[in-house]
Image 1 (tube, rainbow, N blue to C red):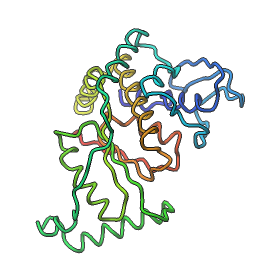
Image 2 (cartoon, rainbow, N blue to C red; image 1 turned 120 degrees about the horizontal axis):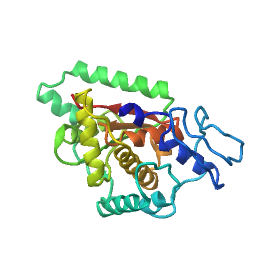
Image 3 (cartoon, helix red, strand yellow; image 1 turned 30 degrees about the vertical axis):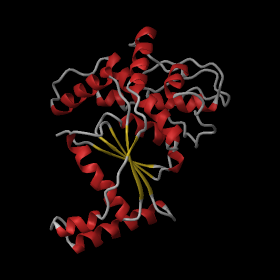
Length: 264
């Protein structure tokens, strides 16, 4: 199931092509990628095409309306099921993706609690400066954490401190939480169970498409609220938002995308 989600025939390619042309295009999915007809540059095979930075931003209209308008290649969901799911996503829309993080002095608190030594702090600063140098970053690195929930679970519990830690290192760090709907969360629970049990039944086509639609919707919202062009490091936790990273890496290849799986 994870292999099918990460295969070349992902929705990120479709968004990339949509950005570069307004001509009608037809697609068929498969392991060989997405095949388009009518691309202005004569590109017939999307797989392997190096996507430059987007020429224009999909910023007109709400993410839900943009999702309805994107001609995404759906094979499992009917139009009525797609509309119902988008309406559910819209109903569960967070007021803001941002989670307010006012935690400070992370290093000092950890040292006081004997969870970290002065040498650990110095080693971390050296490592972080090395990343800045290798990425060619002149100013404070812009770091964005993305996960599926603000409350409950290990990721939410650690995030306030990791944001504070990044700020102690000199980064401009923020924490974002995605929108979701019941069908999406049921699909990702199935994914978690599949990671833990290789004999577990794979996701069906509808579950895969619920997953992709949710990640596309959240990417569209991310672009409106927090332009990926202004993100140096995008840190994604667990399978739920991994599709955002795939889209960002396709359209904004200069962004460092990190994914960490906490499912044991």
